Length: 508
Image (cartoon, rainbow, N blue to C red):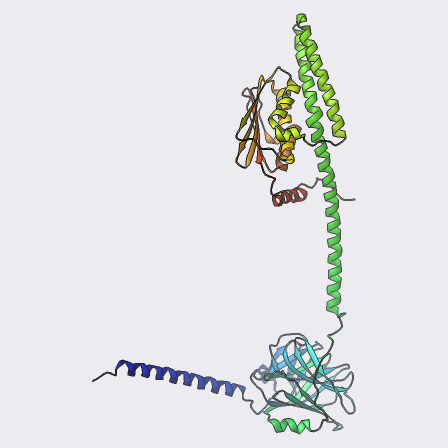
């Protein structure tokens, strides 16, 4: 047996693929046409057949050959059929019980959900408030054509026969009073229309009933049979939405007003807390300034007086010149304390330009003023010196001054070493003494150490103390040379505001 050549095999494969595609297209077209074909159907309104309908809101049941809407819910609807039904005529008899009612039928419905106007399709109904026959397009909004008056009006407990034909973008309607046989007609056209969809029933503000519901395919002649009774075809007019003062909107407005009031109260309380916290921080700052100035000077005075006392106790009368020199130093310290107090009261607490250019010199000068020549002070510069910004220089100067005052006043050292280290983007200040040392416990730190820690936090630096009895003390602080990132400083400030609100504070 001879197999077909390669070209024949390729031609056969292409033919099979094309045949498969043709069969698939024919099947889809046939299924689509069958699904869109409108049957000639009269609905069997028995209780067991309610599952042919799908409810969106409301309360529905079938009894005595009619569908009953037992709810005053606005926009409750009951749907049936296929969303692919296109040209058809819907017939239904309907009546309502109550006043200010609005009831009718829905055609070409799609995308349904619960709520007023929550679907895309057309509603044709009778409105008892003004006695009219109306048609509108709902698409989660509402547009309505000009309604027409129903002869004799629209009244409860009277059956009306509704006939609606939709062909293309043309819809025609008739509504007949089955008691008086008076009829109203309406024709409607929309350029960009909904061309297919389900049928449905809808009521607003009243209980209602529908019977004799049927649907049949429709053609152009069916539309013309109703259209010929009207003088003009109506177009869609976009109407204003419902008034804003619905219960839902009023409730939302009340909730928004209440939320705004609570938010305003919360903001007021928080502003009062921030104000009190700011005052507290300022008081702390002034306390630290006073401690870093007068307290340091008093420490120096105490140190000089202690030296004089030792000379007196030793009865070293030949050392009177030395005692006079110590009294002179103490007097100068008292004068300096007075000057510092005056500057603090005048709130002139910023660091001098000398500290920015020569921090080591400023700290060495502080050590000489406090301890005189009785403590040897060494200074050491590591790395390339860089001028410090005002904020950084002020913090390092005050931390160094407090560390010197603590060493002189409490540790009784003979040697004090001050080291300033510059490393790329960082600067580190270290003060080391050979005094008595102490057992350092952060939980029981005194006011001076707390002040140094706070100043280190203000420049986003790290602060450390290492000390043991008999082995001296090392105080170090490390920070970045450049101005701290503003975002980080803001985060630190906000954290301090919210986390460290003064305890026991309550706004007045």
